[in-house]
Image: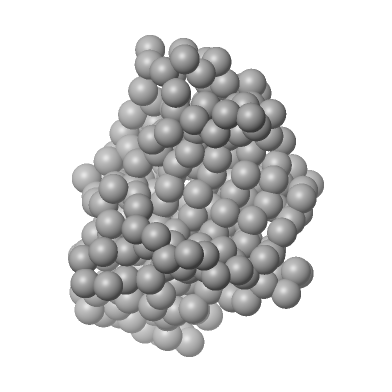
Length: 274
């Protein structure tokens, strides 16, 4: 859920725009005023073996390890029922990659994965770089529920016979509800206006996707790179070490790995704490 401050700001912007005022200017990312249920799940690369050759020299450059593209100090929100996830892929020789989405059970201060909702395999780019996957809406997969937190993982399978050689990242996502007028404003906005509305509503995943799609439409606009850099360096995001990375490549939808080898098992797991 968005903070009252964020909702109020977006509501005022929407009213002004509806009355013919100027479209919203970029005012920076406005994260929700709360963090993750489990802060340990905001970092990646926790299971790499020191002897693994799957990732090219990750210890020499921490910015080139497997990293979830999410704010480090604020909950990562989306307004989408089937959002797009983002992460940094290191140079690798992985046999294949795997994306998984879980519902989560929470008991007091403890959380653990409950049900595997969706899983798919994909072929990772050996050169690395920003990568993404959109949750498909064509496989009977139920939409994300507003106000509910989910946990997602990306794993690089380095050695199918030795799981300790694999590299895994974990991240959180929560779907947020918006008012009809704000939803309409966002839907009608384009380019910088759309990015500004999404960022001021604290919708992390949607902001990143809007920036990347805007770059597809206006690839020579230097302002897009500047906003990307500012977004990553925001104190709640704390991903300034990735600011030199290009935006996720979204100009060719056929490259999306979501439907490569889909599995949507929705199978309850044995309740286990991380």
